[in-house]
Image 1: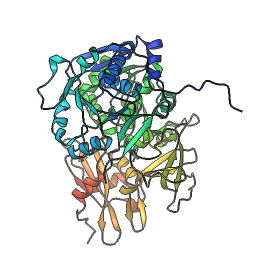
Image 2: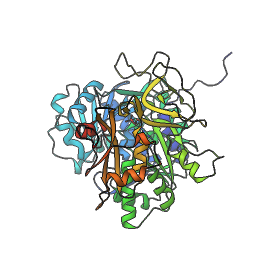
Image 3: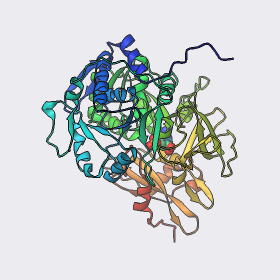
Image 4: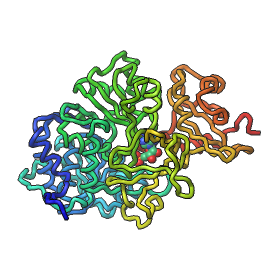
Length: 541
Ligand code: AMP
């Protein structure tokens, strides 16, 4: 027997309709790419999104067409998210930090019909336009007064496009499984692969993300997503925040510590989100300028492991709770959040849980398996490949018939190696391809890095495997020291003594000025291995 409930499709446009209705006066503030601060409300955003939707239809954009965006976090990008998906087209976010050849590949693979581009990124499209046969035009996200000289064949002005159309529009209704947005993984090997989200997956993810024990979003929150809207839809914040009518603050193109601080302070931001490398800059700024942001209650940190020293800095020095989260582009991205269970009242035990990647968010199922695909116990010790399934996890890649990661049994293989403890907390020991194989055993690099980064002289650290004649591979620490510091290998190993298993103790330490950081803010271990793979270990014969 079927329930007698309306079968109403869950569509992204409903979020903005609702926010306009109940939180229409709540603000959306942007540091614009042109410079000044722009402020308006959900009501204004909804009106302009409808104008833009009409404009897109006048450009003959149809259901299923891909529309690229090459843009920072701004109100205009927000309007595009809603206008494009709202008419059943697909918002395809492009990462400006990608190599031009990858950008060309992605745009052609997605067959983007139009690309919306921010003022300071126009050059990236100009440079490759001749290689983009399917592209019909480029919309430059500014007003007429700021339109640049450009070599683009069909360059349109965003404000003219929006203002040239009426806001008279009923959002169309279609199947909730219709594709809504597309984001390519930054894959270090092979071509990037497209994760294609649907209205339904985005909406369910938005409900889950707003929950108190997930990102804790509500109308009273003021949320500044530093995580870019071109990286997994800024972790879904533009949807979840709209669902609850939170005030949104968009940082535009300036993501240095001082600029982020100024905006956090000026707008009384209560929560923010981003990858660890961004927070290193903010923490440095706070310490140097002897300042802080009193309104800030919560910092969501994910994308790479958040070191204990960073959790302590936010919580103990600056009074903001850290929510360490794990996810993937293929997972929309939320997978797990690390919050200590209510029974854990002891600080040390709570910290041991917080440095893990956390418990799955409701909606995500998780398991760890050995090489034969057999499930491993939840004892916090056994580690194997982490697999997931759920209603916001991809079932395949865009226009790719076969994917090894999407198993026949309905589970997605994440490529992460992890343990799960008795309380259900998952901890990533490594990306499978970064694990160090020493004498037939595995050494997880994340735990060692976590400890090294607590050393007072260390700013950043990464651990990689380098070839060893007897053990196959042994760990090497690559350290970016703090200004005027130069910790020795002996000092670091003495610091690690007792914190990690003896046979995990790295064989050597090299100092460097910076670590190679990829397009989504993660340390590029493959690059480091290229750079230091030939390093001669002291005991390596
Ligand atoms: P991306 O698809 O670019 O977001 O990358 C996803 C990958 O980032 C995951 O498979 C993990 O390897 C890594 N990752 C994300 N969050 C964390 C975290 N909190 N700790 C460790 N690794 C993480």
